[in-house]
Image (spheres, rainbow, N blue to C red):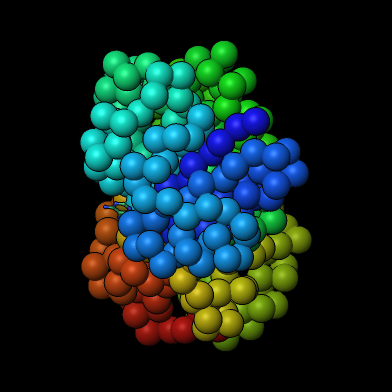
Length: 294
Ligand code: NDP
């Protein structure tokens, strides 16, 4: 039987680790959980029957999974844990991390006989709860096959290439989310100013060629509703856009639209607040236009 340890029980990690706990109960394995603020691990154990442990306790696991804000926090946790890690351990990092960090993390853990895979996810907190996340895996084929049985939170898991490519694909996916969200916001603000009902405009766009996840789900549920529920922080999306531009720069690519988008989200994170929901970026468009998107 397998022991997993999930480190980082945030908006994503908490429900993701819940699926590992259910899988462990079904297979007779163990699911350990750790969080920097230990009360979340305690709450997880009560809710899902996982086992809350201290950081050192995670070294007992065969498979470690992390879901932390950025690669910098993953580095901290690797540093605190590496002396205790056992050879043969698999480390699956579900953070939306940085491709450059993946190489160094891999080497550092390889020296301990530990395999590191980048395995960021998409699908939001709803996908994490439903167990339908898309996972993008970067690493060697054999390592990816080793990880697959432990992705109990996934609806789809795709091996996208070598180390770091999972992080790269995730960053580009998210900057596309940022582009679509921003562009739809600008267009709808103009329509609202011209007196068009925003919900009627969305109904048309969502049955037409301009639709996106932003128009189909995010704007109606979060912006027009004025709810802006914080499930994915604006600061994290700005961080992802920054990684995407680093990916562009690493190949000396030309991506002026993506660069513009990064600038806009950095500004929105400053002005609206990094801790607000990512859809609250459209509050900046509302200020720019003197017009609510509602
Ligand atoms: P949250 O802010 O909700 O959770 C962050 C987690 O990281 C918490 O468990 C927090 O612990 C922990 N943490 C923060 N700093 C440290 C540190 N220095 N050492 C140890 N633990 C730390 O983030 P999300 O769950 O939203 O996001 C996690 C990752 O997943 C990010 O990379 C994000 O971009 C990505 N992601 C998010 C999605 C979403 O919809 N939210 C969707 C897909 C990917 P504590 O409880 O103690 O603060």
